[in-house]
Length: 199
Image (cartoon, rainbow, N blue to C red; front, side, top):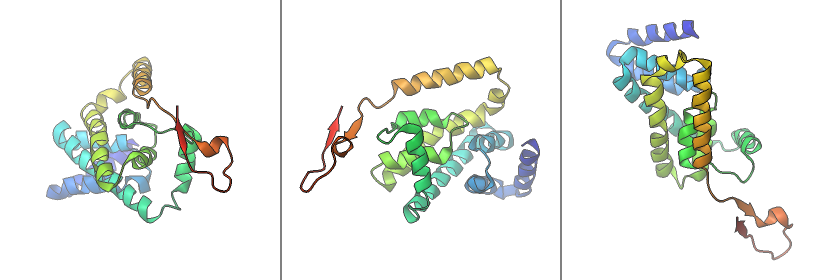
């Protein structure tokens, strides 16, 4: 990963004035290259400093989220597998809140676009999704760009304590109601209305 980081820095620095545009393009190509979001954000902090690096990372991550939305709308059948994985991991009737998605974005080993899918499901349309993506990507860009180097040098105990704190926040910010569909309890017959029950 270090060699990859050195090569990326070299290519981006060769761009001169176009270096920020190249960096943002690497954010868009990141899913195809299987590079973690955190890794690119840390590189942004090394290359451009915490403020400019956070700004460029935020633009790149948000454009990546918008691109994912476009792919999801154009090819919904191809992304059914991601939906099935989400249902297996979280349950069929469980939805994350926006606050939970913001916190989960900070956890490096959770798939970025799986959280984007959760955000699509709770958004009312493209504008709502774009705004929610921008807001949920801000902490990710700021934290990993500005203090990414410090996080990578933390002790295992400190990392465990941070993860436990994030888990507590996830529990506190959870949705307080679960929607269970009527047809989950009773099979649908003839003229039965589609109703849902809130617990």
